[in-house]
Amino acid sequence: MATRHLSTRPAEQHNRGRFLDAALTVLSERGVAGLTVRAVAEQAGASTITVYTRFGGRTGLLDALYERAFDLLGEELRTVPQSDGVAGLVEVALAYRRFALESPARYGLMFERSVHDYDPDPALRSGVLRTSFAEFVARIDRVCPPDVVAQECGYLLWTSMHGLVSVELTIRAQSPLDDWFLSSDESARETIYRRGVHATIDGLGLRD
Image (cartoon, rainbow, N blue to C red; front, side, top):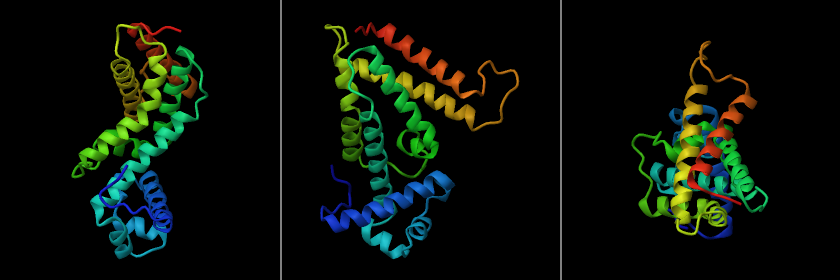
């Protein structure tokens, strides 16, 4: 997969990786507001002109960071053991939630248009969505009813997961409410998430 500014030379890829790691650190620690070329350069111990040279500008850097975030999501999902059936899908859903909670700012860059003036390159966006969820759809295909398209099941399950996670992140970022039914206890939040995922799986008719 290619971004707008991508070299395939090993040394260049190593240097790009160093800057992207720096960008991920800045994003996680300072949020979207702190994600500037200068901040990334400082985190990487380099000059701003070096970042511009590597990525062709802020948009190129954001494209590369967007791609890297989806690569990390794909890696996270692939760490789930290959097990057939609904139980395996639930574990993938839990891995998705863990990834989102690990860095809400990174998740926001991927899905929430948190950088208001940044629109990922369409070819890049299409590519990362295909590759990141290929394994997810493959697992669903094993338990999807024969008259239903696995990609449709995957889309509906993913949107359920995404909605549950996005609302949870929003609630976590706000002041707690004493009369809110959902406990701040992590195990309670995970239990609610599991119930939502299971409800969607049951509604889709997915079976072992």
